[in-house]
Image 1 (cartoon, rainbow, N blue to C red):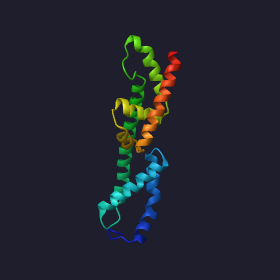
Image 2: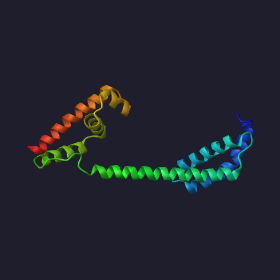
Image 3: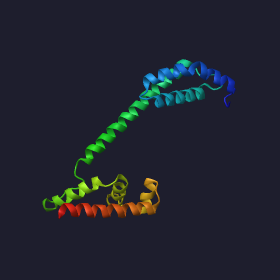
Image 4: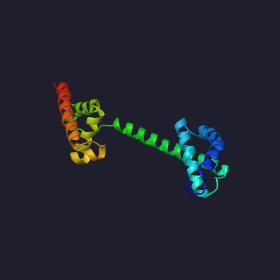
Length: 166
C-alpha cells in the first residue's frame, strides 16, 4: 500500500470495521448504493489524512455523517431544480398574439408529443441557436444524428400541427 500499510493490514482493518461503518451509513443514506459509496469515500478521505496509520474510527464515522448530509443536500437541491423546471414547462414556451394562440398551442402540444431526443435537438437548434456540431457535442452524439433527429422532429411537428389546424 502506498501510505506504508501493507495489504494484509488494510484487509484486517476493513474486515474489522467495514460492517459497522456500513451499518451506520445505511442509517444515513437513502439507498444501499449510497451507503456503500459513503463508507468508501469516508474511509479513503480519512486514510489519506491519517498518513501511515489506520484512521481513527470516530473520524471515519464523523466523515460518513458529514458526507451523508452533503449528499442529501445535493439531492434535495437537484430535486427542487427538477421540480422548478417541470413547473416552468407548464408555462407557455413563447408568448403568442391572440390571432396566433391556436397555432402556438398546437406547436406547444406537438413539441411536448415529440420523443425527448427530437425535442431536445429542436430546442437546442431553434431556441439555443446551436449548430449541429455544437448540439452533437452537448448531447454526446454524432452531428449527423443530431441533424437527423432535427429533420424527423420537424416532419413530425408539421404533421401534428397540420392535423390540429385542418
